[in-house]
Structure formats: C-alpha cells, structure tokens
Length: 625
Ligand SMILES: Cc1cc2nc3c(=O)[nH]c(=O)nc-3n(C[C@H](O)[C@H](O)[C@H](O)COP(=O)(O)OP(=O)(O)OC[C@H]3O[C@@H](n4cnc5c(N)ncnc54)[C@H](O)[C@@H]3O)c2cc1C
Image (cartoon, rainbow, N blue to C red; front, side):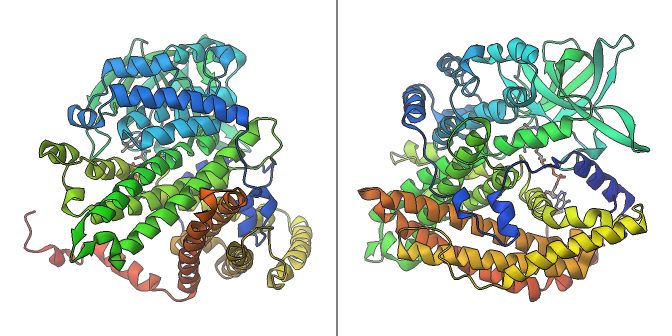
C-alpha cells in the first residue's frame, strides 16, 4: 500500500493492492525489455534470432499442412460469419486432427507440439477465420489446458487433459457484469462445504469465450478472505468446473460486432458443487495463476493478428497492382504506396516480435540452448504492439480497397467479384485491443513491471511502517546503487551494440542503445519529480511504455532481418523492411520523448473533467437522442 499516492480513493487503492498482491514478484531470469527500461541493451538475449530446430519445424509442418487442407475443404468463413455457427462437423474434424490438444503432451493424449508450432497453427487460422481462431485459442491459451500444464497436479493433468485430446472444449471465466479490468469487485463466490470435500459455487460470469458450449471452464471465484500480516485480504481462487454439474446454466448468448460465431454469453452458477481437488494452485492464488497463464496465453493474439495482417497485406498488394485510376495502378500513387510499405514493414516487425517471444516462452519451459528469459513484459508488449498495429494495418487495407473494402465478402462474390472479406476481418479484429488485457491496462501492466527496478529500491524507504534506522540504511544502499547506475546512462554509446551484418541495421541498433539510456534517464527524473504521484500520470507513463515498446519491436525486427540477411536468397530484402520499420519507429520515439516535456495533458484533463461534469452537453445538440 505504501507506494500509492495519498490522493487516491480508498477504492482505487484497494484495487491496486489486490493487483499488487497477485503480482509475480520474483525475476528469476533476465528480461530484455526490463533492461531496456533500465538503459541497457542486452543484445545477446535477442540475437542470434532463435530458430526452430529441424525436428520441431517438421512436426509443426506436418500438423499445419493437415490443418490447412482441412480448413480449405471444410470451412467457409463467410458462412460461419453469416450463420453465427461453426458447423458441428468442422468442430469434430478439428478435434480428430488433435486441434484441441496441440500443446498437450503425448503422454496425456495430445499432439505434444511446441509453443511455436501452436502459434503457427493459430497464425494460419487467424489468416482465414477469426471465429475458429478464437474457439481454439480461448480453449488452449487461457482455457483449462494452459493453467493445468503450468500449475496442475499430476492427478489433475491425468484427469482432465486426455479429455481435450478427445475434443472437449474449455474456457476461461474471469469477467463478470461488474468485473472488467478490475477483479476486485468479483461477486462469484466459492464457499468450502462443512466437510471440506468441495466448494459451493454461486455467481454469474459474462463474455466467457466458448463458455456457452464448453465442457470444462476455469472459473475465478472469491474464496473466504484471509488475514495476512494483520490485514484482511480478498482471496481469488481458480477452479476447474465441469459444465455438466447440476446448477450450471447458460442464460444468454451475446452477439458482437465481429467474431460472429463465438459462443460467448452469460453463464450462471447456482450452488454448483466443485470438488476440492479441482482447485488449481491453492486458495488465493487465482489471480496470480491468471497473470502467469496470460504470459504465454497472450502470445496467441499476436500470432492470430499476424496471420490476418499478412492476408490483408496480400489483398492490398494485389489490388494496388491491378486497380487503375488516374492513369496508373493505384499502387503507384504515393499516398497508397506509403500505406503499403508501412503495412509490410509493420507486419514484418510484428512477425519478428511474435516469433522471438514465442521462442523465449518455449526456452523457458524446455531444455534448449537459448537463454532463459522472463517474458512477462515481452509477452504483454507483443500483445499490445501487435493488436494496436494490426488495427491500423487492416484500416489501411480497407482504405486501399476503397468501396470494395467496405463491401462485404459475400456481396462481392454475389456480383461475381473476388470476395477478399476485409470488412469481416475488420469487424473480427476490433476486439483484440479490448480483451486479454485492454491496451490501456497493458500500458499500466508494462509500466508497473518496467518500474519494478526502482520500486524495489523505494518500497521500504517510502513505507511509513519501516523504522527510521532501517530506512536510513536502505537510503544509503539505494544511493550507492543509483550512484553506480545513473552515471552510466550518460556515457556515450561508442560500441556498435550488437553484431549485425548490415550497416543500415547497425545504425538502428545503435539508436536502440542510445534511446534506452535516454528512456531510463527520463523515467528516473520523472520518478524523482512526481514520486508516488507518477502512478496517476498515465499519459507520462504511457509515453515511456510506448518508447520501450518501439525499441523492443526495433530490436526484434533488426535481429530477425539480420538472421534472414545472413542466409542466401530471397530473404535478403528483409533488411529493407526492418530499415523502414526502424525509421518510422524512431520518428514515433522522438515524438514520445518530445511529448514527455511538451504536451497538452493539463488542458486535455481540464476539458475531460468539464465534459464528465456535463458542462459540454450543449455540444450534443441537433441529434436524435
Ligand atoms: C468478444 C469478447 C470475448 C471475451 N472473452 C473473455 C473470456 O474468454 N474470458 C473472460 O473472462 N473475459 C472475456 N472477455 C472480457 C474482456 O476480457 C473484458 O471486456 C476486458 O477485460 C475489459 O473489461 P470491460 O469490457 O468490462 O471494460 P472495463 O474494465 O469496464 O474498461 C472500459 C474501458 O476503460 C479502460 N480502463 C479500465 N480501467 C482503466 C484504468 N485503470 N486506467 C485506464 N483505463 C482503464 C479500459 O481499457 C477500457 O477501455 C471477452 C470480451 C469480449 C468482448
């Protein structure tokens, strides 16, 4: 609690307190992104760019080929969109392929494929049918398999995992009508029975993807509070709930702007008996479980949107080469060509980031030569960067297709034209910046983890309960640490900052090194100025996060292009893409740095305050209310 600004409301402090107590505190392995925020470029954590082993790739190739053949033959995404249903025989066919047990080890009946191969499968689906990608990814990235693989007991794994190999569907239920990004007000309760053999579950969950058709759901619920260090603490726990249990019901199916076929609505638990063996990890560990599960779970969205962006790029490229207006193909008009090159360069960076973090996630769990990294920041950054960028990319693709971008796929095919359903892709992709951590919450999460380096040093110093003498010792030791660290941020970057083969890329790697030092300095200065109040200055924190995000994306793009460049053949032009991406990212970074000092945050805040106080209601005139 000691880190929170005094002016914060009690409610806000309580929410932050819960999030803080569920945070994974330890950093057992290094994090490339965390070091960027501290002013250090640890190039060897991202280079040489990791590659799949031949054996792993071959295993993935075989499954992905089968999946592609199956999808092309059996699944019509426009029909799925129109009917709001994925046909039962398609779901059965996917189950027969093992698509509901991609990462589940063979000993439990699954395919036993790696994180990279799983992501490749979702990437393929993302390029074809958003609803089917959501079905498989909600099931495997956040649904029952992932938390059980990470935290389940052997008994739990033996009991539940083989069911997924047979096609059982799962879901993850955290959200409630009053619980969106902030889980503190969770009303779903799991109360232990008198004999301790089970929990009684009561409550309602909203928008749980697959929830309406799932066989098993990971449900987050409040268990009785515990007194920890003299204070009553809310306990959120995670349970595997069998939807065949008496008292479980689906009360409503929601319809959305896109992802029309997802089975998602309101589900209700009335005195549902959940065996105590179905508690995962332990009472009060539910949010931590959700956070850690999401570290790898969050990589699925970047993979899915990466597939969609590559498809959109292909549609836009072909159209820009074919459509003639004003005497030439539209791709020759600079306004269109710059959109195309932005799309290509950004898609390349997204791909680099997703592959890099997927390899890091794989290395974390397996015995491979690559260094083990803490990926909490990198996965969150990949989610934030890729979902935000993909929205811009799809918007550009729609613009390039003009009226045909706005027309639906079935309408285009209905008049004998190539469908290229960008309209559906746009609807399907909009939710990606909202779910699995909205972009705003991802900024806060990344800022919290990025500041941990400082907060760890300051926490006890700022805590009024720590005795003065201890504080003094802490101040001295923090002073020493900063005295060694801070001057390094001013040392000019003389080295190349990484062994990259291309001169053009070397320049960018040098920029990353220099800019990360500036980022660390700026963060430190603002921390000194605002202290606890910095937590409430979201715009300032967001700018820092966005700089870190761009630097990480640049590093991934440079390392990936460097590895492709070293190989022979067609991949050599990857340097052009990384070079363009980095030039554009550098521009954005310079703007963020400038905005840290020169901005209109005050005016904007004042207008918003008046707006929320209804003072500008007059502006909403002449409309149908
Ligand atoms: C299609 C779909 C599928 C979903 N699937 C699942 C699922 O499988 N399981 C599940 O549990 N949930 C699921 N959700 C719920 C999803 O995770 C939530 O929508 C998300 O957590 C945001 O919650 P909310 O919509 O209530 O928004 P709110 O939390 O009410 O937020 C509204 C807006 O305020 C912003 N905001 C909130 N707090 C802050 C803050 N402190 N600072 C700055 N900005 C803030 C948010 O970013 C957002 O822009 C799904 C939702 C949809 C639409």
